[in-house]
Picture (cartoon, rainbow, N blue to C red):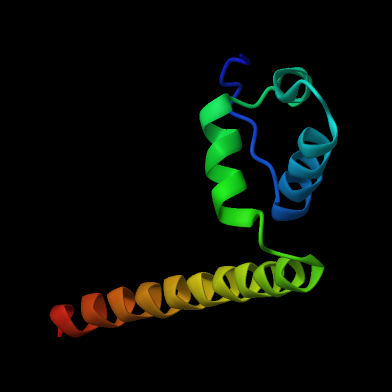
Length: 90
């Protein structure tokens, strides 16, 4: 079993690892190659197995949109804080 390395894999990379593990006789060899724990493998397998290429593409688009919305929220929140500070000084 591989140790936790703290690496972060994208959805496409996870899908590739799962595909490679399914084709291999020894799953642990594949997991060791990518330094992935067995628990992560089973979590990924449960989450991403039924997801085809179009699902992966859609998830990627949604993650990009989520990142954009988080940045927008941070900007609006900062603007709100600045306006409150200006108002409190008056």
